[in-house]
Each structure stands twice: as C-alpha cells, then as structure tokens.
Length: 229
Image 1 (tube, rainbow, N blue to C red):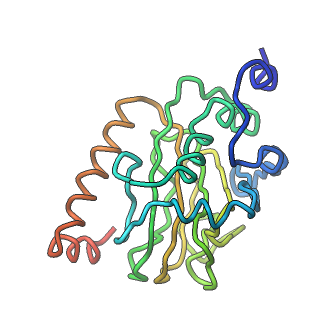
Image 2 (cartoon, rainbow, N blue to C red):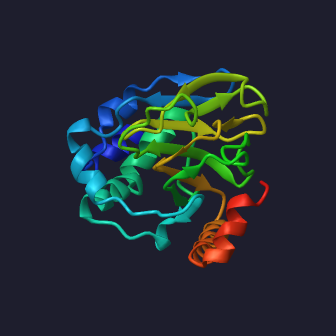
C-alpha cells in the first residue's frame, strides 16, 4: 500500500503543521538530499505556539522528556510524532521509516562562543533529520543554519534563519555537513531524527538528561559553556 493510501485510510489530520507546504518542499540533491519549507506551520499560529513553548535557559540541546511546555506547542509535537508526518517524510525521500523510531531534541539559545554551530554530518545512527525553527525572530547574519559542502562553515550551498515554522529535512550520510556561525541570541530550534533503534533513543535521552542536570548546577554550567566540541 502506498504512503498516500495509508494517510487516507487512517491518519488523523494535522492540528498545526501545514501539510501542503511540507509536501510542496522541493527535494534538492546538491550537496546532498534535503528539502526546505518556508512555513511548515502557518504563521497565524506563531504567537500562541511560542507562548506555550518550553523555556530553555542555557545553551545546548535538551531531550523532549526534559522539556515542559503548554498544549499548543504540544500539538506541534503530536503532529511531528504522528504516522502522518512520518509518511510525508517517507514520500519525500522515497524510503521506509516504519522501523526507525523518532527522537526529539530542542535548542533554546546560543552564547556566541567559538565552539557553537560546528560543522558535522550527524551520527551514523540517524537516517533522516528534520529541523524546525521556533525563534520569534532572527535578525542576525550569523547563526543561520547552513547546508555545507564540506566541514568548512563558509563553504555553504544554502542557509536559512531558525525562525518560527521554517523546516529543513535531510538524508543523513557521510557528507551531510551542516552548521552555523556562532551568534549570541535566543535561537529556538527543534531537531527530530528518525534513528536506527530504540536503544539509541534511550541513550540520547539519557545523555541529554544528564547534560540538563549538569547545566542546572552553576559551576558545571560554566565548564560546559567553554568545553571544546
């Protein structure tokens, strides 16, 4: 049965994601497979969703189990974790993700330190990565997410500000380099990854849970801020 048929036969409609915008996002192949949607969430929902978004006081990523948020932000999470969204991603990349569980991490802000936004291709355990902006605005030239051709953050093919509703998804491979130039600011963005096992999901949430606890201790937080990547 095709993905479109499965969606018609039982998947609930999205509460907040814009299905048409996500479906219309062109799959690009240079320098690797990625797609970008300017408004994956209708802008009219911006204020109510951001009012319910988690408050993240420190830099770095936090796992979904360590976040506290209200119902409208929760509705976005529910959409992202739905079979309907997974089917959209499967269609986009012509792949089967039915055996690849999702893991969600969220970044709240950046300090502008040299070691933030470093170029990386993503873990070999990840199959598809989806990035979704939640910043109210991003008026800076630096700090825009870049699709990179190499490990050089200046060697980019595409970039976008991490503003509300902007979504990029890409197929993880050994050259799926991405990153951003350091910039201090409230840089709210969500990362959803379809990964190779439930054990990896558990490890990621445990690792980020330990990190969240460490960042709640002032001295440890300072050490983490300046730790090399």
